Amino acid sequence: MIRVNGVSIDEAAVAREVQHHPAPSRDEAERSAETALVVRELLAQRARERQIAGASEDERIANLVDLEVSTPDPQPEEVARYYRRNALRFMTSPLYEAAHIFFPARADDEGARPAAQAKAEAALARLQERPELFAEFAETLSACSSKEQGGALGQVRKGDTNPELERAMATMEVGSIACVGSRHGYHVLRLDRRAPAQQLPIEQVRPWIEDHLRTSSRRTAIAQYLQLLAAQAKIEGIDVAAADSPLVQ
Image 1 (cartoon, rainbow, N blue to C red):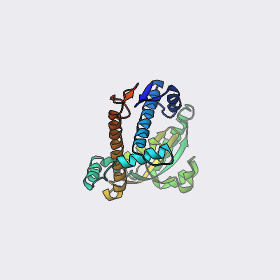
Image 2: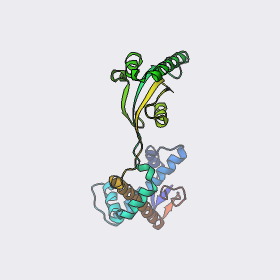
Image 3: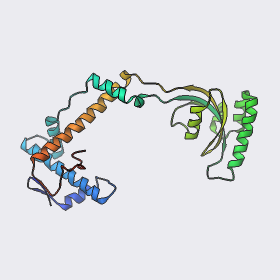
Image 4: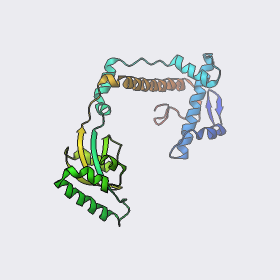
């Protein structure tokens, strides 16, 4: 039996709480549920002790935390330091302009793959001699709706097309044409333009960084507050001070 300052948390309460704590194993889910109930009881008892007002227990607990846990706003030097240390998070995706001629053949269709590849390579050989025919070939040969625009895909960012085409566009020379195989078939791909990734200015991402730092700081402060409440309480049947306890995390 788990008790918090003499107040029992029975197995039925744990069983009801488990559904809110998905975990790899039943034991882990129960451990998380038990800890959550201990935390709630600690906070509820503290709210009663402080005579915190509120229409419900949830509201009283929220008001208690707002009253007793304070976190300062992040300072400009903290924001700048986070920006420097996480520079890659604040890069734009590369931007490409490309066109393709698509010959469909799913990766698992072994009968169709060779024929689609042969058609794509034949078209590529002809276009390397007469690149000005690309739009015409797209209109007559491509199985993609882009054929209505001469094969033009428009501006493409990461995630806009399949990974095989993205990798090809990242390495091709601008103006070149290549045959690219993908899980969907074969593509005669022309890269028209590439705009490399760029660092976003700090002023543009400052609000996000401030919010992230504020949230992280508050999470840490709440964890420390809960540890203090737990240290001052008599808790039986569970070790909430253990290294793997959610109170610590």
